[in-house]
Amino acid sequence: DVVMLDTAGRTHIDESLMAEMAEIQRTTNPHEILLVADSLTGQDAVNVARSFNDRIGITGIVLTRVDGDGRGGAALSMRAVTEKPIKLIGVGERLDALEEFDPKRIAGRILGMGDVVGLVEKAAANFDAEEAAKAAERMRKGVFDLDDLAAQLGQMAKIGGMSGVMGMLPGVGKMKKQIDAMGVDDSVFRRQTAIISSMTKQERKRPEILKASRKRRIAAGSGTKVEEINKLLKMHRQMADMMKQMGKGKGLFGRMAGMPGGGMPQIDPAALEQLTKGGGLPGGLPGSLPGGMPGLPGFGGPKLPGLGGGLPGLPGKKK
Image 1: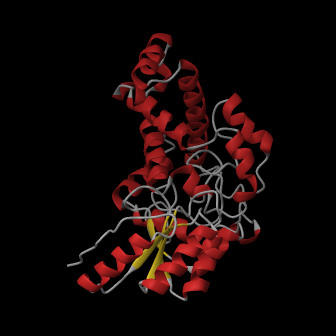
Image 2: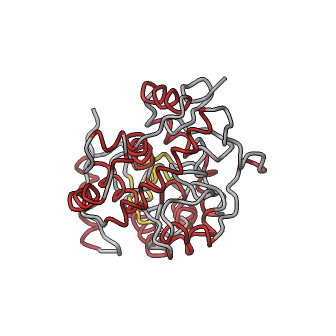
C-alpha cells in the first residue's frame, strides 16, 4: 500500500511553512518527498524548489500545468538548481492527466515539435478493441450517423480534447494565437455533444428528419441555438459523404500522406475562420473531423486506435 501525505502549498518562501515541513519529515520519515510546482510561475517556482531542496531535501519534482501557455522552461531550471529528477508532469485537471516525465518529449514541446508518441500512447490507453472493430466495420460499409460522430467527440475528450491534442502535434504551436482568436476550443465539442445527446435515437440515426420544430426542441434541451445545430448537421453531412466514398473504395486516407516525418501541414488561417462562419471544421485542422488528426480520414501518418484508425495489428487498420 502507498500512503500519500499532502501538505499545505505556497507560491513563495514561508519560514513557518518550512519549519512545518521539517517537522513532518522528522515525524513520518517518508520514502519520497515530491515538490509539486506550477510550470507557469517561472522564476518563483525555481526559487521555491531551491529552498525546499536545501531545507527538506526533496527526491523529485512534479510539474503541473504543462499544458498551459508556458512551454515548461521552468522544468529545466528546477532540474538544474536542485539536481533532482522531474518525475511527473500534469497536463490537465482530470485524474488521468498525470504523465511520466520524458525529457525528449518535453524538449519537443518546448521547441514546438510536438509529442506524437505521447499522443499515440494516450489513444492506446483509452483504446476499446470491441468498439474500434465496430467502428471500422461501419466505416467499411460507408455508414456514419450522429451516434458515430458523438463517439468520435468522446474519444477526442478522452485523450485531452482539442487543446491537448493540438499541443502534442508538430507545428501547431505556431498557429496557437490564430486558433485562440477564432474561438476553436473544447467548448465547441462539448456543445456539439450536448446537441447530439438532446436528440432521440431516431434523430441520431436519421438526421434528415430534423426539421425546424425538432431543431427548436433540441436547441432548448441542449442550451444551444438552432444555428449551432445547423452547423453540426452540415459538418456531419460532410463526414458522412466522405465515409460513403471510403466505403466505395475511393479512399481519402493519405490525402495528406507523404509529408516529411508525418508532420502537420501548415494550417491556413482562412480555413480556421471557416469554422466559425461556415460551420464544420475545414480539412487540415486537427480533430475527429474531416481532414484532421492522425488516424482520422484525411491524414496520413500514425493511426490512433479507436479514432477511425488503429495501431498495427489492432482493429481499425486494414492489413
